[in-house]
Length: 485
Image (cartoon, rainbow, N blue to C red):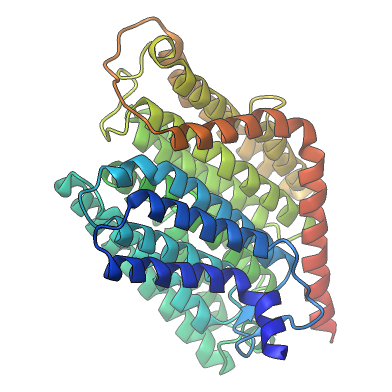
């Protein structure tokens, strides 16, 4: 009975997703000609069941399971919810793509579920062994998903580049973990934190290696070069998935690392801040000259990740709250943008010239894309505006010494206006385009829902802010209590 309550209140969402992963493979073995629509519905049901399992946990029974390898708290459950929402969007965007497959539809859905499972485990890891296993589960599944494409040349190039860079990043993370283990003699986050100090150069070096390796999943400096090629080479739904879910999972892990493991290693915080500054500038400046829509989304996601890194590097409850709110907004803004691009054309070579005048021939897709792009830029009264304003507020309240940091963020926001509004200008200008994409109803429903959320959730942004503040305060107070104990 105790084991049942531990599973129910700790890893039930992961158990449901893992069971769905096994179920898809069983279906594939039993019937190779299994209906693709059945697989689609089955995956949606699995992810919805896992999402509802995250809504009512009871933390009074047990906060840890697997000897403390997985931490269970309101913060980890929020990240699970965000990952599952991203997974549901990815499955909805995948419907038409999977219907066009001649074979391996079941394998595609199985890999998607395994990547989601890896992301969920990564976001709530409390042990470096669990972190490594989850990181590789997410990574290997993502590499293989990049290979699912009708155009073998582009997909294979994307997969190999993603694999090579990811392998290097994994080696860097493992080397950093080995240094921390050598100092502490433990893989447990709390145990490592108690045995390392800010004056230890080995601890600093280990932290730098671990954080640098995680930059790969975040597409942050220095591991950002893969994003453009992978987003262009992978299929449309996979590119949308990679732009959101691995990032959210990596941010969840990074928050735990900074607040638990490296809480006393103060130099890691300015190191993350420097990465954030370079990530923002690199993403925005590379987007300036980019005309391919997929590559533009890659550089946009790099810059957006830089904003989140900025507030995470502050290490306060207010900054973590701002990061949580920004990630919630980012999920819907980014999937709405990808949905709009997919409704215009799933061709990887769509450029600004291709979408000129698209609002007249494809008004629904164009309006959704415009809404998402303007929200990403910080359009007033959209959730994108309030999420950026909350980021500014958290930096401003951090102290007078960080005001230059706020100035840097404002510069990058203004830089992003150029390429976002350039895309909007191309869409609304009269012109001729040859876009003839036929889309499924599921993509339209997902994109419409995301667009409505962007437009109207801004009026209720205070609810999301209060929710993120409540979770952030609860999480930070739990860390303080644990340290005092």
